[in-house]
Amino acid sequence: MTPTGIFSAIIAGIIIGLIARILVPTMQSIGCIVTIIIGIIGAFAGLGVANYFGYSGTWFFVLLTQVFIAVVLVAITAALFRQSGAK
Image 1 (tube, helix red, strand yellow):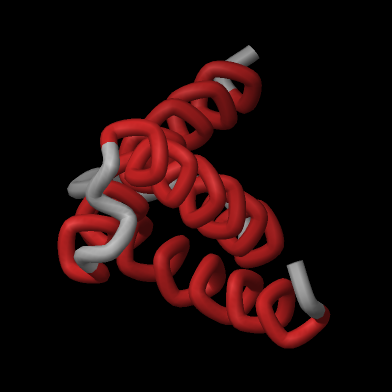
Image 2 (tube, one colour):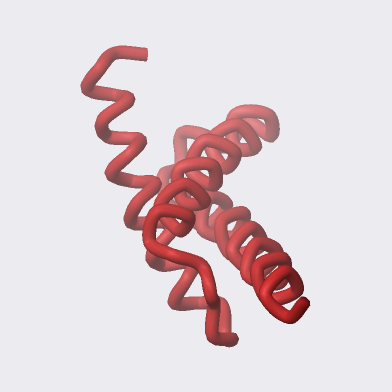
């Protein structure tokens, strides 16, 4: 992967993380850095899933997959932060 590709993936991850955070209906106690990291992980995981299932050429379905994975990760992370803060 070229440096331009890595930079693009990070920017896409930030946007995907923010979209995922908006789509999760509860109030999250996670910070911006955690959201960005989750978005980047969701972006890379979504691209991997798209490559595995063979639809990586269709950007819209790749984006939906990335956002879906990021939404799931935001929900899980917010629940973990909520549980750790309740002690």
